[in-house]
Image 1 (spheres, helix red, strand yellow):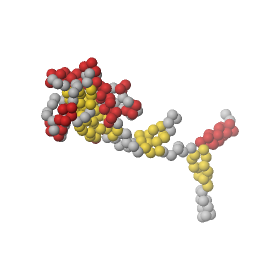
Image 2: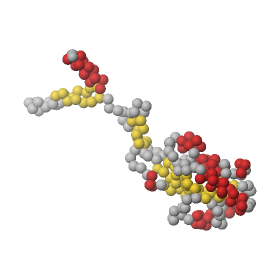
Image 3: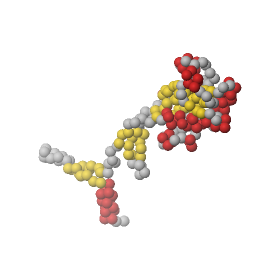
Length: 220
C-alpha cells in the first residue's frame, strides 16, 4: 500500500519539475546520497509512519451480494499517516527555492489524493485520502532531529503528510440465510411423561402455499 502512495506522490511532484527535467526519488538524503546527485532532484523521504488513532473504528462491515444477502463480514481498515520530508536538490539555492515553491503550489491544490490518479489497489478502497503540506509537525517530532539522524546539514523542506487506509486481513464468512422455521404443533399432554414435542419444519414457500389455499377455501 505504501509503495502505491509513493507512485501517486511521484506523479504529482513531477508536474512541479521544469520541463519534466530531473527526477523524484524516495531515498534517504544522506551526505553520501547528496554527493552522488548530478541532476535536479526532488527527494520525498518517508521518515515517519504512525496510526491515526482518532480514525480507528470498532465492529465489522457487512459485505452484501446483489440480492442484499450478507456474504461475509470484514474488519474496518486502520488509517495511517505517512510523513514525507520533501527537499529540492540543484546546484544553486535559488533554483532549489523555485522547485520548492512549485511543489508547494502543486500540492496546495490537492486536499485529497486525486481519485483519477489512484492505482487500482487504492481506488478499490473507495476512501478519500487527505493530503497536507507544510503543516507544523507535532511537538514529538522535530525536523532538525531528522536531519541530525540523517547526518546531513539542515536544509529547506516541506512536510507532506498523506493519510491512507490499510485493510485488515481477517474476513469472516457467514452461514447461508435461514430459509426454514420450526413450529411446535404438539407439546407434552401431561399424561405421558415419555412423550416428546413434535416439531414440524416448514419452508417459507410451504407457508405461503398453505395461506393461499386457505384463502381460496374461505372465499369472499
